[in-house]
Length: 211
Image (cartoon, rainbow, N blue to C red; front, top):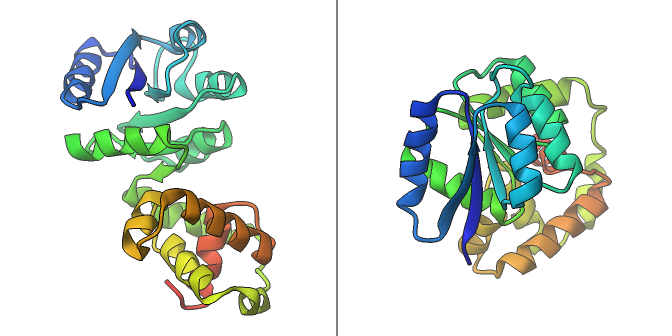
C-alpha cells in the first residue's frame, strides 16, 4: 500500500532533498509540496495525503498553526524541524502532530517514521523523549500502580515495551504477535491503568521498574 506524502518547508533545497529521500522508498509517493503553512493546509485539503511532513518555522502561517488546522480536518502530521526547543515540541504535540523529528535524522529513520505515522502510530525523536516524559510527569498526578496487579502476564510485557518507547509494530516483532493484537493489548492496558495516552503508560512502566 502506497503512503502518500505532502512535504511542507519554506526552503526549496530542503524540500527537494526530502523528496529525493522519500522517493527512494518504493511504498512512498510524494504527492505535493508547500512552502508555508497556508499552502500546506490548502494542499492537504485538496490532496488528502496520508502524512504531511511539516517544518515549524515558516513565513506567514507557521507549522504549528498549520498542523492544528490539518489535524482538525482528519490529517496526520509529522513535524520535521532543526529546533528541539520545548516550546516547539509541546506546541506541535498539543496541535495534534503524530510525531516530532529533528532534521539530523538519517534517511532510513525518516522513511521509517513516515511509515509509522501512516500506520497510525506516533514517533518522537530520542533527543526530546526524555524531556517530554519528564515534563509530562512533573505536571501529572502520580499514577495508581496497584492497577498493575490487574494486568495479565502478556499485558505486562506489552506495557514494558511501551515503556521502552517501542511502537506497536516493533512490539509485535519482539513478542511474536500481529500488530492488530498489540493494539488490542495496548488499549486494554490503558483502560486497566486508567490512563489515556501511551506516554502515561510509559511513565507507569518506568515507575514500576518494568522498563
